[in-house]
Length: 483
Ligand code: C2O
Ligand code: CU
Image 1: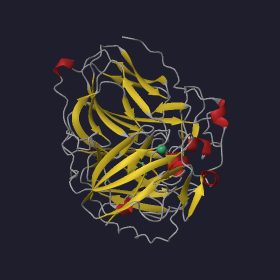
Image 2 (image 1 turned 180 degrees about the vertical axis):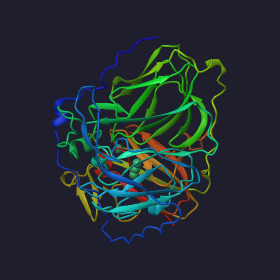
Image 3 (image 1 turned 60 degrees about the horizontal axis):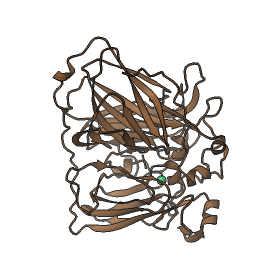
Image 4 (image 1 turned 90 degrees about the horizontal axis):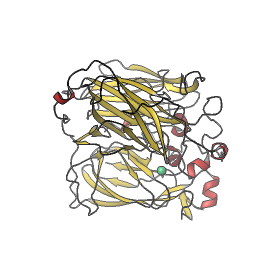
């Protein structure tokens, strides 16, 4: 048993990279053609719960250090945990008390398109001082999250996100749930959000906005107690703008029971759990430690290992850990399995970024050289197009299976997120995985290619983008249509 000292989870960041801000990125790009959006559905049944986007503050640094002024939902960061039972309607009246327009995306929910929160594609931005009613019934149980989807590179860097939990009708029995939201923050010397570098094109063309302070649940070091023999369900979410994290619960061997809000066959973790921005996992962690022992929670990231929290064992056992039964499986996912035969094959080729080979890309009607793209705040392209195009990447008939080959021709990792749909990652030989893992975000390492497959069964206009938010803002975004 190792005793770990608690110390602030500071990430080394050179002064140069902190201060080298570049040209500001353009704000959320809107489609050239005017789009008509359906009016909010008439309020049916239950009254909407008010939720405000506005100012918030949190103590992100070590005890004694100043608080940080943030933006948050419901005055807190993370925002309030929204819980709904599977099959029940969620109704939220979003009030915008910010000084800039916003919109809320319900990440991972196979949602009604009009409620998806994408400015310029599914709704108009919610102007300061106005409100918008979100109303939908999540089809799947699991760990999801909600976040700003307007200027998300700024609004999420300032804290506009929270967890959305959809409960299974018969959830597996555990003693307690532990929600763990991991984020990194770029703070200046006095603990304030480093504003000068918001929208830095240097960040956008490299790894994105990486912070210098890492937190769990907005705490610089999370102390959690656990009883010997206790069974916990952990719900983990990486809400960072761009940082890939690998989390480790030392002294324990948790089992994964869900990934990106969808159940998987329970499997033990053989090493740290990698979560790219936007990704989630549900783990079962059994209290197998000794009474009074202490075990670090580690984050491996960017070549460093940081202690970001600890599990502290009580003296009094809950039960004999040996009496804990096998790890329970969640009820299986309801997502239709794609049929690869006769599927439509498409490609998504990512180019650009620092040390990339991209020479030019289309922006609107023009083909621009890399120099001119950068001048307008773009550094990346999907299939030769920078930013969200007027025409969809693909237009699918409802029920059609799409097999997309995603090709990372850049020197950087990216996490590709689909709206309204989860997908399977195919095996190297192009076959369906024997043991399916449904995801709404897939990580591709530099120069890596993966094939994903899904049934385009949710009608509407759906965004697909890199969830490294600066990459999204600097070009890595397109959309597909299901009619
Ligand atoms: Cu969580 Cu379009 O993203
Ligand atoms: Cu990216």
